[in-house]
Length: 304
Image (cartoon, rainbow, N blue to C red):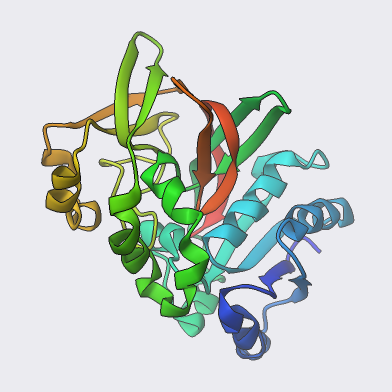
């Protein structure tokens, strides 16, 4: 089992794209001679249980087939399982989602054939894993992310994204364009290791990788393996500021804006002045409450 891949494929999302690709991927795996066993998820969260089962059975290689949500849940499963140390598990992904932001950030091919060929490479690497603790009256939720976690406009947008998924890769862009006028800035307190900031934010992002939201570039030059969280705060944005910077969200020019603050730290705490913050990570709504972030340095071993 040490040399076999335990494949976890998203069997229910992305308008059937992943499900429709599974037979093609199986054929390519068979032709390549790669040993594997395939498992299809029925619902979100199955990935975590499957990783627990895989490591308990003795598997040390986990191959995801899906998008950023699938990758996030598999990595969460790796972090949560107690059968073996995290660094004994090798993770790989065949990207088959809408945004595929983690794969793009890592330079992983979106072509199935090329990606399967790369599974025989020795390009093993490590990256940090972000942790978000969401604190509310209901208790504490601990969530993991490998690309980006956000509070503000991106979380607001994610609540509406399902209505635009039929647009495929353009879904994030059109959802943003249509809904930004109804978004209101959120008053927050931000606490880092050495400062407290009170401001009103259009967007507050905590990231490890370059891309999020179907190609948005909201994190400035993340190393991804230095044990630091990269933080972007777009503060006091008017509707005109949003319009003026809209395409800068995608082309990396957002950081030239004077109202955008960038920080790095090992931990950060964020709370809303009024109400609860909605927290998302890797394109999944995590929950609502106060949020404390920290990082597990080089917590993920993966195959590029």
